[in-house]
Length: 273
Ligand SMILES: [Fe+2]
Image (cartoon, rainbow, N blue to C red):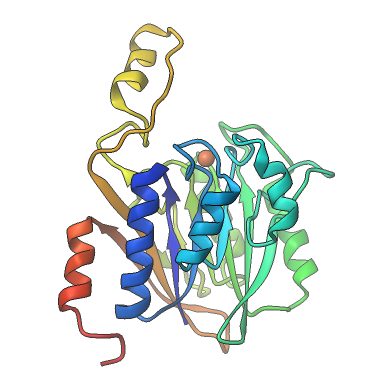
């Protein structure tokens, strides 16, 4: 089973590129299941019901998030209606929504767990203990298990990768918006990357228009952050997983422009041919 995980979709440029990429990669690269981190889909801050529904229509199977999930207040109600939109599982008890879901791809159950780091972030519950709790609760319901670890620190993300090696299909990092070059399959069969990167405007400071973000660093004065638009790039990984064992066979890193996607559509042989 080929699984596409899309790095943080940022604003309209990210949404448009994600839609094109899902179509191209489903058709020409044999992708059968799509997970996307959507916490920056609405102008860089949060996600609305309308945008989430259009991403589902575009072919996203499960949406993950992180620290920005409540930036749009309507998400508080929406996560209670839509089980395919996850918020971190280690948010405090009683917070609306859920951090795990089980979806299906051609009849095969696929579990997705979303957790958030504590280093340089709001320190919610222990993500390692919470992942254990979520895996126990799954009780073998799915052999394919994907973990989105939304975290800042490389060390914490690597620790989660090694902690879950041989227990889940993939641990992919999100949140930093900068793709790392360390995609690999760990010895126990867990695909890993420290950060998938950002599907959005790359002439920016992690998605934000550079002038405003730079101004805050230079002066410390409050500035209004606007989503950038220039140089959109698609960042993601494709994980090739064995449904019989739940182990990853390979993980491929993608960093593509719109022109790259056009080339895939125009020239690439169809998957399996
Ligand atoms: Fe984040």
